View (cartoon, rainbow, N blue to C red):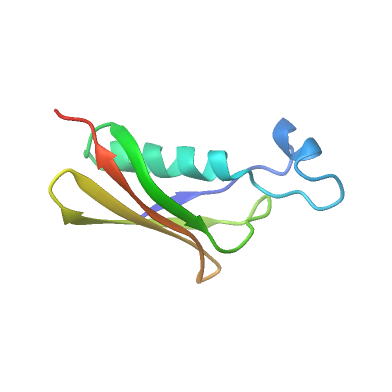
Length: 95
């Protein structure tokens, strides 16, 4: 289980969205890809699918859970305060 949190002072939050900052989806996916690499699975070759189901705000801790549904694939779930925020699956690059 990996953890991620975006600081409230991060410059991308000023424009995403003014008055109600949200962590951009691409930043969450980057955190997932980093967690996959840090867990020793290697690099991501392809995002098979991703579903964003709840917004994540600055300073909110996100727990990233990884599972292996099959060879060369990693499924991920991102939980924020126990609620699902993002889920999906990637294909790994060959070693």
